[in-house]
Image (cartoon, rainbow, N blue to C red; front, side):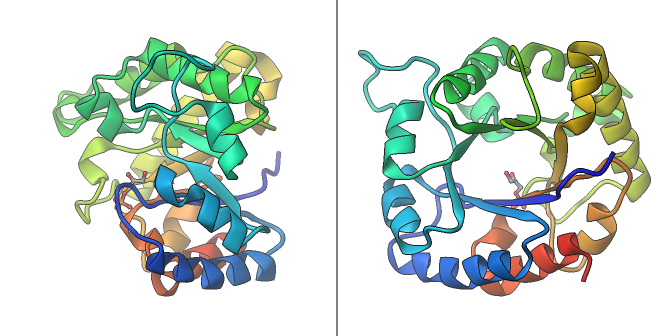
Length: 248
Ligand code: 13P
């Protein structure tokens, strides 16, 4: 089965209005490579300005609340993000799982909230170094997937990002064989959980993706794209990753 590649950037808590100028080059690269999808998850405060600046580029959020509205001070709902211009959101990033103590159940509810709002979800999973060293990586990740996968997950609105916690922002990446093995395990679990439709769901790799390692990572077996942190902050670093995904 061929799946369209998706290269998504995650700016995390970085950037300001001036930094949105980087989106111009990213949008140009997206337009130059129509066979793949390109997306950028911005800080909530920049979504509206980013979406207005580059209307053709898929702008998204980094998190949304699981509820549609209510007394949740400081949070934003999927519909609020959508009205601002977000087409998708990341949910269950390991930084939120660790810092905000987000559980699989909550991550699943957030992904379902995105679907209700007519948005796309990128659901993140990934093991810690301790878990990998203990030989628990596949068990941990497939369990996270089982707990976090939204009901009715389908390729047209849901993607999975495998982000080993120890590879995020560290400059360390798993071997291509390890990435392929984990993506194979995630694919098998998706088939168990959603049946044949699981074959169409895109699996992104994330964690220290750069222009240098992207060609190998992006063409590993069962890797359908990348979720990129630091190297998504400038067009100069991100555009070569987009080109690598497009195969040139
Ligand atoms: P880095 O690419 O900076 O390692 O971040 C990966 C990540 O967490 C993307 O969501």
